[in-house]
Amino acid sequence: MPVQGIVGRIDVCCLYVNKIKHVSTCRFGQLPRFVAFWARFLKNFIIAAVLLLLSGLSCAVQVAVSEDDDAGVRLAPAMRPGVLPQHVQRTRQAIAIAPLLINAAQLAQALRIVAMPDRRTLAGKGDRIVGEGNLHGVAEFRVVRPSLKLHDPLSGEHLGDEAVVLGKAVLQREGADSAHSFFVTSSTQEIMQGDLLIPDVAPTKDSTATRPGAAVDAQIISIVGGAAHAAQHQAVGINKGARDHIAAGMSLGLIAKNTQQQATRSPVSESGRLLIFRVYDSVSYGLITESVEALQVGDKAFAPFMEYTPH
Image 1 (tube, one colour):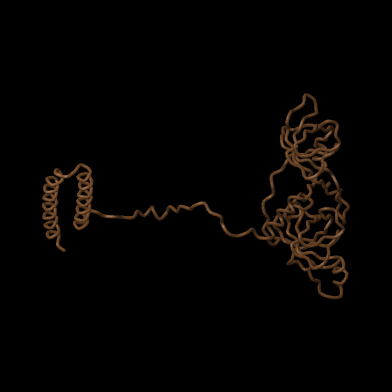
Image 2 (tube, helix red, strand yellow; image 1 turned 135 degrees about the horizontal axis):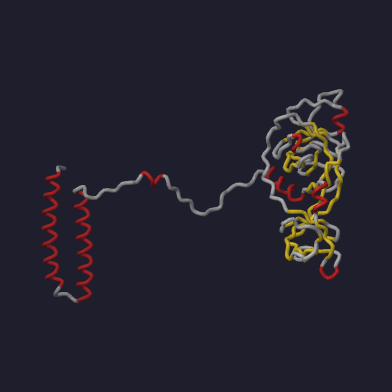
């Protein structure tokens, strides 16, 4: 429709609206007050609607969407469906119970628990204990108990001492001498006199399986928990660490001893797979993600793409 026609219709409608106002005012003055009130309300509503319609016909009202509106996306709080991968769940469980490796320097600087509350022999979460030693400016500690000395099966080198994690404690009061008061914030086992306090370490990140960048030829030297044999979803320690280019997330193949003895007569096949989740300088711990037979101390751990040669 031409613009002149639209403007002409707007003028006619405006005159009509003014006439409605004049007539309605005269008539409403003779009605009861509440009836006049609602009548004026309806009249004003109709007038506003007519004016809006006329403004739309004259192209005076425009609706536009800004380009920036698409950039902002609002998300409502909601439960996200899905579960963690199984190997991540198992790795987290293994990390929770995996021992710590203490070297000679850490063993020399560790604080030793010398007293319990009320002359008791055992302590747990919520108890106060007394530790003797140098704090070195640290306030948060892990309570550990050395359990096993690890040696390299080939060279005989002392690789460190395994320590079972018993719980966590925080400094409550620093003593004037070398005796300090601690509060046990968590515990998984009973704490006894003679157990050690070592500085707490940052949690290990989740491990994602990756292929090693170099050939790996290691041996199992420890089974977490002290069992004689290990299978799927159990953690083991090997005699290779960061100095041997081992990193968290590496996936290694496992060869059992009986498979090694048969390797001279037939092609060797893997007995399982190992996912490394904690790495020290000379020792690493991993989770057995697959196994077709029982594994034990002395079994081989090697890079999957490396050609295995029995010794």
